[in-house]
Image (cartoon, rainbow over all chains, first blue to last red; front, side):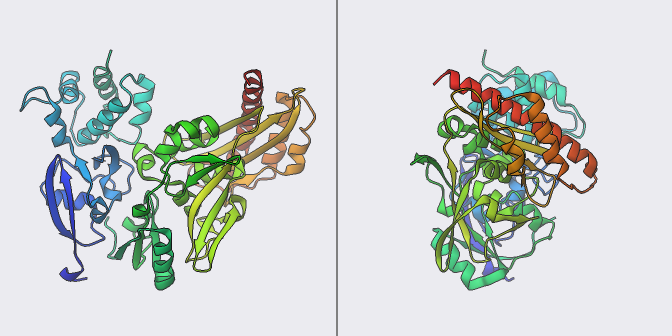
Length: 160
Length: 294
């Protein structure tokens, strides 16, 4: 393949318009990382671990299982975009603040995926049970195995 | 791991997809949700020269007409598990969809893709078989319909020709006094099923069994329906757990599941029998409950 096989793709990341020339086989994950979105992380490359989770038009997806060309015209949210929903500029998002308060991050590698998955759940279901949260997060692996604190942090963010 | 290079074409309609398949032959693969295909590409187990992206075709709403639920092939699992009509009129399918993979798998995966992929441990092939679902298929010679039972052949193998695409899945609407169940055993939530069982039980006005279907997943090269003559033994009798247990055990005894790293074949067969009994029982309880509230 030569550069002539590249296709132009445009989408927004955290509200900002982006454009890239990509080969069809380049994953959205690789293209996002090349564009400086290092908060989106490679874990397994098979859609199992959840570290590359991004929200595609509001739905959590594995960026490793999506080709960048498929994101044409889509709106993407990474964890960096979450803080845009904070009360004050520069403040963490309430969910991030809860993760900090609860000590829900150990090495932190899985945290962006956990936050985005939890955010999407809470938007759809404002009052999930702990069991429901556990089920929704079953596709996000934490190899520090710090799951309890993560569940605590998300529970803390449920609407009363 | 990253996918090997391929050429990419967006299909705006099923007709366009069929034309692309006819042009590129076996060098082309259809891309729907990509939750099974793309891991295979990333691991380079599959290396198609062309990828024909069906996603631009999109999926219209699920509709019910003439006693049939019509599901566009690109209906995502997320819609199956949350759509009001599916939950009300085909709860077995909604339950099965809610058990597929993780939340990201369900956000992208499609019912047409799941049936065309034909994983023997897949939830949706088992659900579709149990429900007596039918698919519409489009090819260069036109459209044809086939039962999911005719579609599913073996491991990742279907009756689809290389230039055919599933366009719609149709599920019979539930009958009065019909109950359902979908059960699976997994080692961890979101894993492939070690074994699964799905059942429908229909009662008549007297409360005796009028019809029943039972199928198993994860125990053979494709989902397997319990022999009709076994289920026939339940008809005209009141639903009783002992009878269900006998039928499920006899049905499971006809299975010859293989050993793998997750479970031995003997264990799988045993689990299938237990899940089969529970599924028939739960379906009968739901059938009775649905008869009480017409």
